[in-house]
Image (cartoon, rainbow, N blue to C red; front, top):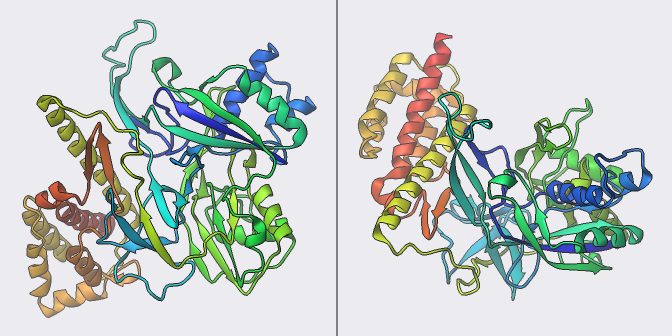
Length: 520
């Protein structure tokens, strides 16, 4: 099997729409999906052969583009400064919540899939990054974004109207970034695909191509005989005491009823089917889920949205060994559906270090963002960054509240009192008012807060945790406008007590939701 490495440089922002954001916004993935690259190559094939549509009964067409066992078009991830394709961060990696990634400094990362003996007191997920290793230090990369505001126009009049004039927002991959995809194929198909790619360096990907999006350029194209996705030969990873499986891309799996579900135990079944072995129960699981869809260009319609296991999901099986040929087979074949689009990529026995240092790439190596020298422009960018940060926090808050549910056991009067006190502290982010309320409750009210459950905790214990550590319930949220960067826990946010304010809003929202559910 051969691998074609395809290095792309974005000339314009790329809109690879995911399912994030509100109805009037399109938020791009942090990578270029393999399905987009496959679609662009199909377009070239059709133009080269003057086809108006593909003949799906043609054996060559099916083999090149629609067979999961033939060419697989892997996601284009960020290219490192050492010209290596980065990979998604494993979900088993954690850091101390007080450590922040900064330029010219490193943090200690703990891999909980290996050992949890020396874990930090307050572990927190490292965040959404891509990574490579350089000189024993893990370098963490993050995609750069560009946010544009557009006005919906009437197609016939060419301008906005009263009925069609709403504003919408594109959060796209910025221009000037380099990504690398890999196309895995049989020897006979490699030349055919290469000929489709070398005819023209310009490649158009994603949505809104007529509005200044989607232009990329092929800057490097190579055919490699012995390619390894994680850069560590299988012979170095065989016969370990434990077996670890890490997803290198989102993975679509179906349960026994044929329904797509994001159940990590289905990884175990899929591996057993590919290798024809029996695995024990997992000893460690670090899983995440996402929604996957797509767009059918022939019909001009979106594909159904289905749940999938997120890239970085890691499973560990104790006391099981597999050999080199089994590792190669599993990593080459992958698991699940839509493998031709880059889904279902796995790495076996990839992670070996209990803890290690991680840092951002040197700033001298990174392409600098445009600086805002004009005072008015910088002030505007700061206001935009503040509003976008608050918008992301608002979306995260709504999602969080949707998952939380109070069991019965607390009266509406206590919930109303809690909302009222939280509202008093909201303007200044003063959590002490709610803390004082909870510490001075009468015995009857105190017992209501103690016996009421939220998830697997008492409501009182959960409130104490939120109020004591207001940043803990919020995952890493940040925005960047030009060279203005804002984070939910940066100095400005701490001065404004942003985390405290949203913690009070969370408490109010949970109490309000519980009150409404009681009335129903």
